[in-house]
Length: 303
Ligand code: FAD
Image (cartoon, rainbow, N blue to C red; front, side, top):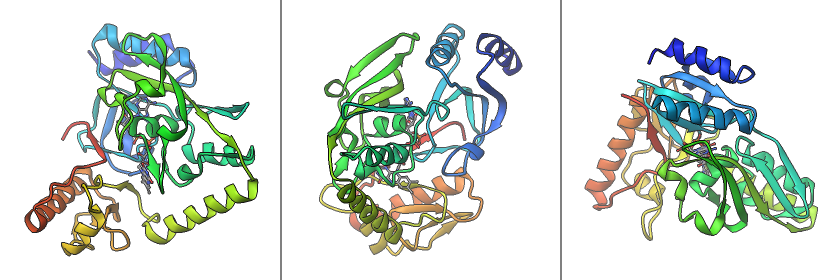
């Protein structure tokens, strides 16, 4: 189906949503890499999300959901079909110790809102540069906390456009994994159960974690955070460091000299530079330690 035709039909179905054709995704993701989306839509209501999903299902068009793009590498050939970027759905409310956040809200902002309400439980998330939807999908976590610890449930849309609520216990949450990896659901909002706490202690915890992050991570460059999952009983960063890979570059991508677990986009890296370096790191660690590093980051789109 012609892209211009899809654009016209979507525009008449959801006139208020922002829709673009052949849009450069690197301008809209944290990693600052990746090719074009045939169609990029930023819905700002749940109705619009349902409408787009039903439309894509009827026309047999591929749908890809994005949050802040801080855990995906979009290949240089871009993404065919419709890219649904959720970052305009960013409202949050707090009532009776429950924080309810739309999926495009920043998880950092959610942790700050919790602080403002003197609620504890989301401190771990204060430096994770993703959306609430991306954090659920990944069961994001840091410094001993993870989404699964505080999540109650999520409102989602299935691939036919129906709304449903999924409880935390039905999400198969594990280390950086969830039921959402199956691609069957688009997350609209999530509810977190928090507890009353002392403002000063919550703030101190968040300041401490921020300091730790700033001192250890190369936050001055775009990246996707830790590229690899922790292998059993080891740290990926340490294996990479001991393989002498820090500072190794392909094009504009470099194994960080500050934190070996990060590959940073130091100079207009292409996705192919980045992916080439991921393979090089994996092969070198395999040759030296006979350990297979599994990527945490997702690779999407076409070569
Ligand atoms: P995206 O990268 O946009 O998407 C990730 C996946 O989620 C994709 O498969 C996408 O399709 C899916 N997705 C996104 N939104 C939705 C939705 N609404 N419905 C359905 N599917 C959706 N991660 C940690 O766990 N802990 C850390 O401490 C951490 N630190 C980081 C530090 C840096 C500097 C960086 C760059 C990344 C870090 N990350 C960390 C990785 C990343 O920020 C998290 O995984 C984050 O939760 C991803 O959210 P996102 O909105 O960017 O998701």
